Image 1 (cartoon, rainbow, N blue to C red):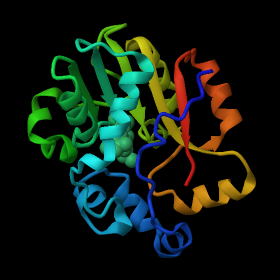
Image 2: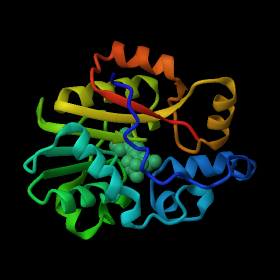
Image 3: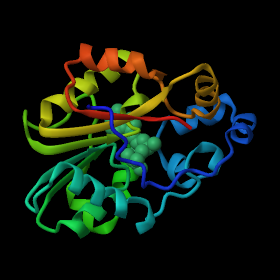
Image 4: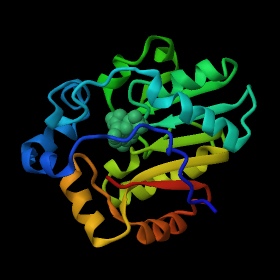
Length: 218
Ligand SMILES: C[S@@+](CC[C@H](N)C(=O)[O-])C[C@H]1O[C@@H](n2cnc3c(N)ncnc32)[C@H](O)[C@@H]1O
């Protein structure tokens, strides 16, 4: 089954959805969508409110990826929407011989990437990945491609499929019922393509995506 939660060990946000919804205005969304300093390291209304490294975020999750996909130490991994490279850093700690690459649309995030990943990350668009077909054993895109409008999002799904050789895993903003849809729309700051999980599955099939996926449901 390609639907699989490989992020169940990632710490859950404790930010109350209703409170955030009452504070966010259109202006915050406009600024957040630039994926600049304000989104990562500005006021919480624009995004993360400070995007720093802490091992509690990714350590267990990268171990879970390794176990689930049976990754060998010489594996190649691409993180699409890698931000400051924190997940890649933790992959590097776990598998020092792995080939690790990350791309992100944010010049700010790439310029401020964690030191040991600076040489591994670059600015690029998920719609046009600067890699050959079948380049990576594992391609990961966590909460990144739903930030593109619908047709561009489809292009990015095709790109993930194209550069993946063995495995891919993506997560996107989604809902399973009306209540979750309302919560998602209240919570959303940057997403431009969000839909019911069944509609995402139709989209994945339309794009020829055959790998794994899961949902971000606040
Ligand atoms: C919510 S953050 C997630 C970051 C990281 N994947 C994580 O889970 O911690 C979304 C990321 O997607 C990046 N992004 C947005 N649009 C993108 C695009 N078209 N191509 C590549 N990255 C993009 C943003 O700059 C940001 O770093």
